[in-house]
Amino acid sequence: MNSADIYTAARSYLRQNIMNCYFYLILYIKLIEIFKESSDYHEISTKAIELVSFFNTSSYFLGKLCEEQKSIYDKVIVLQYLCVIRWNSHYICFNSLVKTKIALKILVTKYENLSI
Image (cartoon, rainbow, N blue to C red):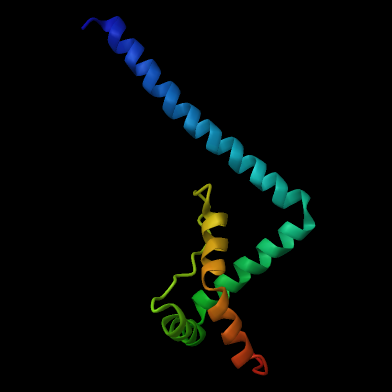
């Protein structure tokens, strides 16, 4: 194998990997633009992040949520917080809330008269 073959293989490898990274970067930039431009999306995402933050900082209510999840789903679903360096962290955060939607609704009805 000569150096031209190695160079061609390296170029092909980099092109495939860089294109994947480039695609995800463009996707992330577009996603950020959508959240900035749409006040509805921005408000919903802010409230979702606040909800995850609330449960992750309150051991009492996190425990109650875990109990509800165990009784409904027979497992505990972790509420994922945003990670700045992950392009899909918004998706992971929102998906974790959607997965435990029923348990959250039950918990809200049980404690709706409680003032925090």
